[in-house]
Structures are given as structure tokens and as C-alpha cells.
Length: 214
Image 1: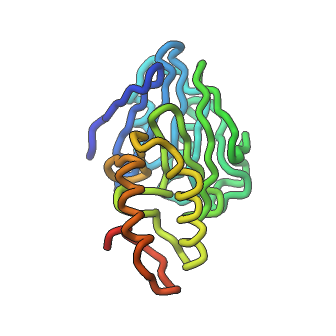
Image 2: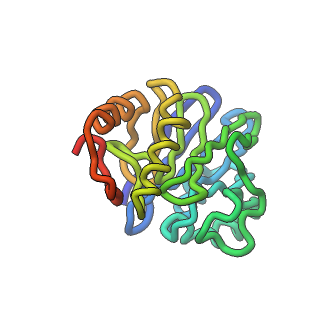
């Protein structure tokens, strides 16, 4: 069971917890000035997310995508906070009542006085989202250290790579990538790893768990 990591990005504070049997990362995004916060994803052990930032007023629950390991505690978190659930509309796997507030590419989410930017990054799932503020990117399962998230088909992989290249690799090199599982990386490191991948031929049926430098 992992502990709590925390990061600062100006007025923004980010708490990261490793939760559940699949080592999901759950996040709390906080405006340090106002004490308002948002939870990102709802893995198992959601009660640990609620306890991680005492005094923070949770005003929204953000969902990166609709896979079950990212939604296991959604009911618990919704009941405990009363906060609206925000996600991409029509994302498979979400409960019928979600999202309560739909998010689109380029949307802005107000957390206290901070505006987090929404990036629609389809590929891992049709409605996968990332959230960006300052030097931090909450990447869901779109991008991990060493490669993209799992893809179910070659078409999905091509779409995911296009999302990563066009939406994420345009961010500054020092942007910290906070993924849905595992340790962080940076955009600069990931972009350099991808350059190795892009320089080589690949079979047309490539998909699944792909590594940039394998």
C-alpha cells in the first residue's frame, strides 16, 4: 500500500495516493489559497482519498475514463462529498447518471481560483481525458513512463498516439506527467522515448501494451 505524495505548482497543491489491488493513482487537486479541491478518479479505497486532505472542500469529482478500476469508489465519494461528477459525455463504463457535468476538449474546470484545462485524448478509451495546470498533467491511462496506455486494437493505438503527440507532447518539457498507475515522468523524457519508437517500422497490427523503446 503506497503512501501519500504531494506536489506544489504555485498556488496548486496535488496529493497522489496509490490505491486498490491494481495500484491505481487517485489524486486530489487543491487551491491552497481557498482550500477548495477536486478528486480525480475513484479507485478502490476511496475512503483513503477522503482522509488524505482534511479541511479541503471537495467541489468536483473528475473522471479520466470509464474503466472499472477508476470508478470502484465513485458512489462512496459522491455520497460523502455531494460534489458533481465530471467526465466526457458518452464514455463507456460510466454509470447512467454520469457525467452530471460533461467535459469537452478545451473545457476549463474552476477549482477555487485555479482553472484546470481539459484535454480530450481518445485511444485508451473513446472519452479519455487529461487535466493540465501549470507544470502538472494528470494523464489518466493515456500516457505512462515508457509508453501509451493499453490499446484494444491497432486503430485505437493510432488514435492514442495521435492524441499524445498532438495534445500532450506540445506541453513544455518540464511538465510532470502524473499517470493513472505507477510513477511520474516528464513530457520531455516521454517525447524523447517516443522519438525512438517513431524512428522504427512497426507491424500494422501493433496494439496492446506498447513500449516506446521496446
